[in-house]
Amino acid sequence: MPLDGITGSVDRATQAAAIAQNAASKKSQTMDSEVFMKLLVTQLRNQDPSSPMDTNQMISQQTQLAMMEQVSNQTTTANENFSLQMRMAAANLVGKQVSYTDAATGTAVSGTATAVSYAGSVPTVTVNGKEVDLDVISGIKSA
Image (cartoon, rainbow, N blue to C red; front, side, top):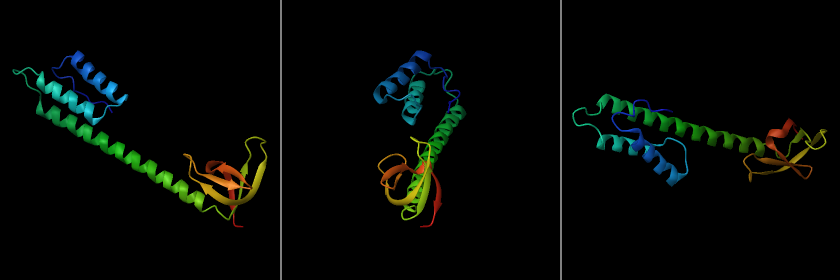
């Protein structure tokens, strides 16, 4: 999310140095609260005393940062919820007859789900002794 109006009276070289320093320390290309605060402090230090930074602009920038952090937190929560739902769905398959298409042969396979593994990013279900990704399963029926 871009933070408009952050340039103020700080020269671009100072901003670039602050961003580069943060990128070197975190190896990250995202605009986070640490970068924002460094830029804000640098801007306040180097501002022209006869033309100080507009307080409305500073409050607007802080509001944008807070909104960006909240969106980031909501995204994390949504990802965790989706992961939990996949785990619950996989666990509910144990003891049921499931079907899927074998990627190697292209044939339809069905069997009873006997176990679930959460070791990977997508849960796997053991069907007929073979581990199958949850998102490959195409049908379910009661055993």
